[in-house]
Structure formats: C-alpha cells, structure tokens
Length: 325
Image (cartoon, rainbow, N blue to C red; front, side):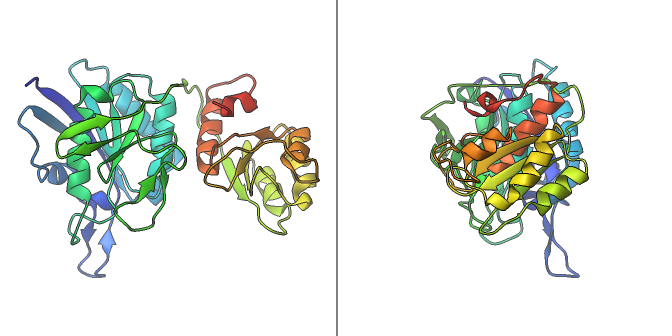
C-alpha cells in the first residue's frame, strides 16, 4: 500500500477539551494534537505530523485567526510530499471556517475539517472516530479536487453548504437541500456526488468587518444604522421567505447603500433562494431597487464570509451574480 503523509493542524475546540477538576466542566482547546492522534489507531501506511496552530474554543475564532490558518495551510502545501491536511476545530464556528478555506485554498490536495460534539474524556465521545476517519479521508485519492471538506459522524460534507443543526447531538451537521457528498464505512471512503463548481480567491487585504442583521416581525433599522455608524464595510440582512423584510428598515438600508456599504439579502429559511416575486414595501424587489444585492440561497453566515473574501480580494464590482452559483 502506498504510504501517505498527512499534516494535522490542531486549533482547539471540544475535540481537544479536558475536564477542569475545579469546575467539573470542560475546558476547550487544552488537549494537544499529539495526544489526540495517538489514540486513533491509524493504519501503518499513514504518517501523521501534528502542528498546533492555536488552541482555542471556536467561539474565540476571528478573521485574523482564519488568515493565520490559511497561511499555514499554504506553507504546508509547498511541500510536495504532503498528501493532505486535517484540521481539528470547535463545532460552533466550524461551518464558517470550512467555507472560508474552501474560498481561499486553491491546492487540489484534500483539506478536511473535523471536530466533535463530545469531548475526548466524555462517555460516548465522537472525537476519535471523527479524527481517525478525517485522516483516512485526507489520505484518499477520492478527496482530491473537492475543495475543503468536513467529516462528521461518518459523513462527508462540502464546506459550502454544511451547517450545524444540533447543539449537542453527535449527528450535529447537515447540508440542507443538498445532502452530504459521501460516507466513510469503517476504513473505506465512498463519494456519491461532487461539487460542479470550485471558486477560489486571492486575498490581498485584511478581511473587512461585515455584520449580520436578522429581521423579524416588526423589526426596524436601528441595528443597520449601528453597523453603518461603527464602520461596517458590509451588512448581511437575514429576512424570512424570499427575502421579505419589515418596511421600517428601508430608510436605514438606503442610508447604508448610499454610503457605499455592501448590503446583502439572505433568507432565514433552510432551503430556497431570495428572489424578486412581490412588489410590496420590504420585498426583495424593493430592497434590490435600493442597491441591495440578492444573495441567492446563501445563509447569512456563509454570505458574510464570501462578501468578506470578495472585498479583501479586490473584486472590482460585487453583484448578485457572485451569489447565484
């Protein structure tokens, strides 16, 4: 069997947690990558090198940490002897990190992100099986040129559509409307479908501040105004259905777009696209006439990440076409 070299990048999270004897609670990000990988009972043909990038709970992730992680991956891939990379990560922001990496890593070799819902010292932990299968996936020829993947609970997901669906269950992630790409059964990788499009961007500037504003019954524009006044370079509106926002936000939206702030419209629904169907005040049609960009089927967090990358990549004109693909 051909030998494989996999680099494991440890960033912390529940998968690297230990119980604090003083509080009785878990402290995320304190178990080393070496400790984790040593418990995975890997096949002898796979060599794993562990590098600790940072050890934090994933709610501490920032745009700056994301860029650090990106640069570490690019540095590692300068070595032609590396076959793939596995990243251990907390689950709370895993979907955002995986999509960011999908947008900025152009190398065809596998980048696999994984984590766990239960810490390594908790009964019924999913930490070791997720990590073991992620390493197997990174070593598989089937994973080449699929973009950044997520391995969780024996399922293989695209970074573009993965979403955390449960706060604590080991079956914690899904891709609503699109499904998973494949599975791992014991040690065997099965890929059933592949993304038809891969897009990557070269970041030239720091990722800019982008805020998410969720609208609901009776919302007004105060949070949009706040984001504008605090220097946001983009605002992602999350509205129900096809993108139907309360009309009380319209003046605030217009002030933002008139100042050159990108405003995106997303839907709070799990499936479907925002679209101009109705002409009542607050509809997607009304917002589009105020220079709001309709963001297709992107959820607010993925739209935020893509907008930040597009701005940092010096995209000259960002339009709705960038979100309908």
